[in-house]
Length: 539
Image (cartoon, rainbow, N blue to C red):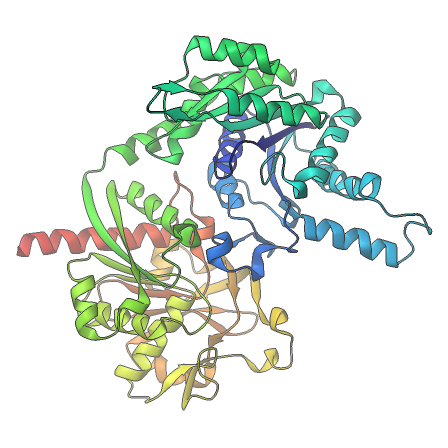
């Protein structure tokens, strides 16, 4: 029978439930169990796809095209399992399903209520992976903080789930904050006690309490929490700040988290196989080289907007035994070439990630020109590829006014445009989401990176390279080198004669792993290392 683990949060938000859930997934998978992670968010949006990145951070995209919470990126990176549409559920999606069923007569004229109708829908979604793929363990993170009004139906649903599957098949982990009062020089346990009391008042007794703290928790604090919160003292797990999120699973294993979860769920506890992960962390903490990568974007005030890109750059650094220092540059600050030269000078690589809208685009175009003219490794992702095409069309091919119809309604040269089969569709219907095929040109940087011409990558974009300009670019140095075979769409471009200048329409950051860097991020950082070495030799 599938076992269920529910992770809730208390005291404050942003404590790292997603990292805790991902770390636990890794610890259990390393013991040989088949694990599925999922996230339930209490907000009323159907998904984060239409949310401002400043509000929610990045939108993570799964293989089957789900636009999901960024925590799913942590789940995939830690457990190396591809998640699906079923892995992220919001209150909006739950209520929409319930109301659609009511309109269709699915409740046979009965009164529709939060209990049991809404909670039944939540429980059905919690248990759906068990019916479809029958994993050994499902780990469900409940978004928000215990005590939030919007979280109450989800808390009630997981309480009912334990009653249905039995206590031996269900574990509750509660993650809270233990603040340190500098003046008193003391860790305070009262916030955790109150948070657990709130949870108990909703009918849930946690089996494990995970404590986020800046200072180590001693034996006396554990005993105190065990007494007041009704848990075993060895089930009080300290979750201290780590140098890297990738060290957290190793810290949790030392704390005994995997062993305790196996005890609560009546599972055999075997020795975990973590040697590969340990070696990856060792390489991360002992770099032999150092590079400076400039990330030019429009959402840099909230780093979570580019979370998967940031992590993928780190993965590329691990693969090259290099420390990657990321310099975040707001593209709106790049008002002219002089400003670009002052801000980007001395960098070893430039990356422009995805984005929507026209804000800051001219600064990005200047940044691409700087990378092209100064032979600096450049990696353009989604919008970053489109910007490279626009820059080259303007400054090399002399197509005055070249632009994207996303930014300008009727440019003189729409080198980026909606394709004819997209016209007339609703805005959401024009998005390419999820996995699509790409066939690389033999001998291209793309083919060399992947080691094959047949590629599959995840997409999240609306506008495409305009094939009316295909022949012109093919005859130039900025050549299309990867094509979607189903719709003949340009997926990648490369600049001949440049050390490493690649643009891709897809989002490779969604498939990168810390112990298996995505080949494009690996090669981008490798090119940056070469640039840094050569620049150092010149100096």
